[in-house]
Length: 453
Image 1 (spheres, helix red, strand yellow):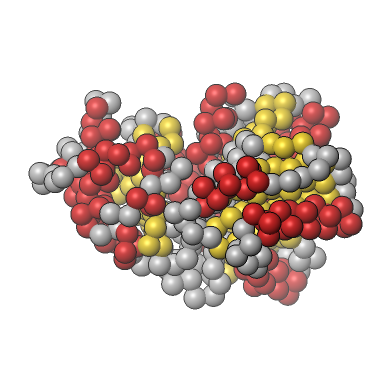
Image 2 (tube, rainbow, N blue to C red; image 1 turned 90 degrees about the vertical axis):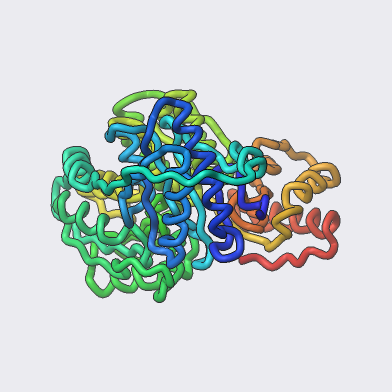
């Protein structure tokens, strides 16, 4: 059993190498025992479009049944639908089989037990300590909350005026539901790559990467659409593209949602360490309380629950609306609310975002590293780095703040990579912090190629 599949906020690895029947059986059994200890006897399970989904679902069900837990299968759904089921259904436990934005041969599990996210690390020791399980059968069934979801989103996000909207689900799990949602709220919908296909034949479903947005941008321009949205493989991250084909940064998406929701309720806004320095300034100016947190849906959700935050957001495109919604990351609902905001404005989408501060920043940058050594490498970097006249923040990896720029280095919790981002008030300041980080990386890791992906 590969210990590295048990991660800080989910379970994730190669479907063929890491998710053999015995491993998945044991994971299901341990999760089932946790659910059983709470006096419950069932769990919602959904999956995305990956080709390994059926085998993992079968073996997960065997393990859950062995622990006396019946599976209510939601079928092929985006991850937010599993979360939604745990909020309005008659049990508060859910498991989503998904590899999210990882390569197509990967898969994993996102877990909610008793209405709280459960990390892979939390169950790792129990799974490894398990020798074997005694097989049992349960009355498994299927269920759907699509109608409830459609009705509730319509009540909260109906458009004031019609918009022509392009949707690109990248052949992930969000396509069919997203079309229904947007038609239901009053949009004219043009949907590309809607059919779920785990081979992702058109492009990889990761809206944070510019190269994956070529089709949606082209369609927006050809169709003269008002805006477009791109979703990741399991529908919990969103990308926004304007009528001119410009990608809007997640920093600015969070900013416009802060404006919208802090008018309704003053309170905390949670954001991750990869977000712009301009975001906490805006939150304070709007009467909110900025709270910076570690990256990861697990961390953001727990921070929202602890603080009662109105909203949470990550630079990667996870948005967590907690005002008249449920505080989980839901790309489809977020896109619907953004569309509602745009429909109520006389300005076009480009004009709405022009008011926000403009900085010079990179997208999320990745460096390939050894998965088993990445966290130790971060510790080594912190011990040996040398940044002059800087404020050092160790919330998640190392964030180096200077007067007019900052840089971040952290280990990914979902893949064998370092994650970096740089921002400056000018292009010169951006390059200065980038060069200083790269100089430190070369000094601490002389054999690590600085080749970003």
